Amino acid sequence: MADFSLMWPSDCPREYKELSDDCCNDLSLEQLCARLSKKEYDRNVIFTMLRQMPSSSRVVKYRVEVFDDILRHPELRQNVADLLEELEFLKSLHKHARDSEAASIWQIINRLNELDSYIDCVTGIKNTLENGEIHSEGLKELLKLVRHIHSDSGFPALKEDIKRVVSDTGNIKSITLGVNLNRSLSPTEVGVVSVNNKYYTRVGVLSNFYEFASSKEGLHEGTDNSSMKFHMSKSGNGVMSISKQSASKNLGVLSGLAKVYVSDAETNPLMNNLNTVITDMLKPVVKKLNDVLSKYVDVSGYSLISLIPELTFYLKWAELTEQMMTSGVKLCKPEIIAEGRREFYAEGLYNFKLGLKKTDGEDINIVTNFVDFRSERRIYIMTGPNRGGKTTFTQAIGLIFLLAQHGLYVPASRCILSPADCIYTHFPADENRTVDLGRLGEESKRLSEIFAEATDRSLLLFNESLATTNFEEGLYIAKDVVKALHYLGARAIYNTHMHELAMNLDELNGAEPNDSNVASLITGIDHGERSYKVSLSPPCGQSYARDIAKKYGVTYIQLKERMNKK
Image 1 (tube, one colour):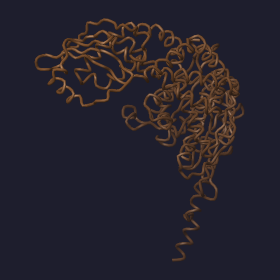
Image 2 (spheres, rainbow, N blue to C red):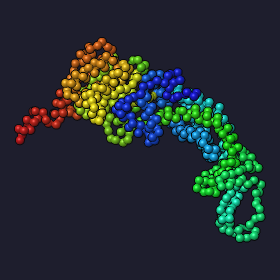
Image 3 (spheres, rainbow, N blue to C red):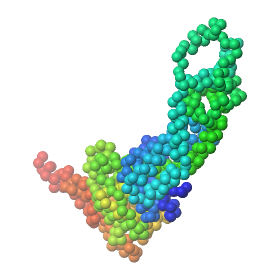
Image 4 (cartoon, helix red, strand yellow):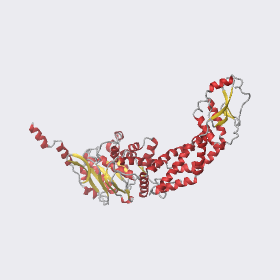
């Protein structure tokens, strides 16, 4: 059970490819992580996991089913959220157990209530999984794990001990101390005389002191140790003897002492001495508590602590997914097919970032589209007007693969997907990166690196590649790039302003015999307005310009008529 994971089936190797920094930037991964959590730990965990792309359909299906179960069970998510806080505590408990004995004493005693909460959380998850309709292999294995923890880690006995400790602690009302003074009446030694179940009724400590010191009756001859030994501490270094009552039978009393001392021990010398006294008194108790808790921490804690990143990942995505769907944003569970088929089909597809904007209250109309990758058209050359949605659509394809392959719901009404082994992006680079090689050189270098890594199972996304050089040079290189994509056989989007690239598809498809053909996509214009609809169609070329010119009245005929009217 030590290797159990909610991300990886036990019978699959943990193999993935890591997305490049360029790809993470082009797909806005940091922006997504910032939207998921305000905590730096959560963001770092989610970012690291998102960039690790699994490609096995078996692994992806495993994740899809786990996430679907978690999303459908709000009660389970709440129990998991509570559990994560307690798991973080267990990590700190293990750390403090290796620190100084004094620190571990108070840490253990004062955290017993949190251990009690941890037991409740594990029990709650067990009960939720047992009573809910869970279908995923991963959560069924998690149920086995929490059952194992619950039955084999001494939960019933520990629960009863904690209950007794908490109950006993509530009876402590006051503590009687014995203090030795020097000639200046400064405390030099302090010891515990008794622990009482009643409050002192007189609270004027200073007036009481003067009252007793000025009266013969008030100044005692010798000391009154009552029935308990004086547990002395001198200048912070105690030489102790254990009280007549067994410390192990008075955990509640000792827990109360811990609560008394904690707030002032570091700043108050008297309380600091008391700290040392009680620390030495508790040594046998601590050993017993450590012996009891060691199995609990090692078995129960670390079996689940290793799941913190995975639970964090699923929980944050489930919270966001539910929020988006409640806001009316359409998301669906992806259908995963064999990776070797190299197919992708989506209805109602849109860019996930637009869904986030709508969820956050922006008044936007999300235009959805249809896309289909298969042997007849596995590579698309996309053309259309500037600001017509080419980049948004290209990024949308990358995000839907990214989300689906981590088991998450995707921005579509239906999605069927063969996992890609990796995503490669080629978007315009920052100016600072082109200083040494120039833009064309820098773009060409990145293209070469992508083709050195990509396989026929990859997803390649090109956004206005080679657009910064002159038209003839850009078109010449772009044709070779598309021919290379055809030869590779990978799924790809090449969006460009070079309409000529998509005008002779027979030439591109006939370069090499292959089962991955090139097709043309266009982003639409409707009565001079950008519609952001994508359709399978030959490039329109000058028709876009004609529509825009007509809308704004700058065709030759319109301009001529305007001048004649003057």
